[in-house]
Image 1 (cartoon, rainbow, N blue to C red):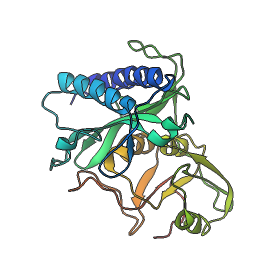
Image 2: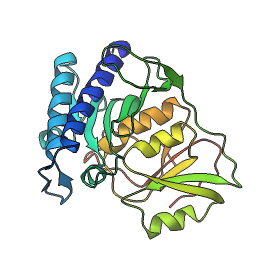
Image 3: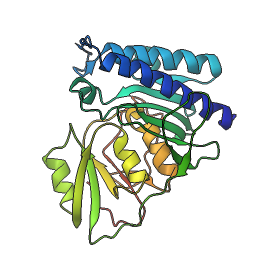
Length: 265
């Protein structure tokens, strides 16, 4: 894999998809519908999915591709693949809260190794470079020319005063019960894969998820966090979260900076 070409392509497609999403975001009608699992989907999800999928298939025709919006890709049994959530945080998008992202990632041998997370309404762009180091790029963003980059790194947690980030739309009692096992000085809420990025930049120490997620929800954020020195662990045994599972469904997990004495859930 030519990682430099991959990251240039993933970055450009994320920015192009973000433009399409924001065009629809500022329109009067999202054309909201329910999928078979009752989760919402909009024309923005579908337009961004088509743009990214076409671009990735054109650039990397031999690499398997899994996307949230194309059910025929969900039966793939592969360990190396590209995976896309064209609009993560559809509920945040619908309610115009801004915490939604474009997620594109490469999984190799079951591990997300490269990824891009773009939050167009927040003007924040995170990705791994060709070497796997995670960076945040400052806007305004040019699709063909990379702007100013700052390497990002996870925090050095103080277990007597941790900062936690949790889901804005899916926080529940089980999540609060788990968080209450730790000495937390403060918490914040965020939507979509931004939570991984807040841990990656050191703005939070850990993010527990005791709820349903799919691999396309987490792969890009997982890659960004890994490239910043963090980890994503299953909460049942604290082993690394892996990808390419039969249904692409994730177990409960925690995304974290090293140095926290974690407990299972």
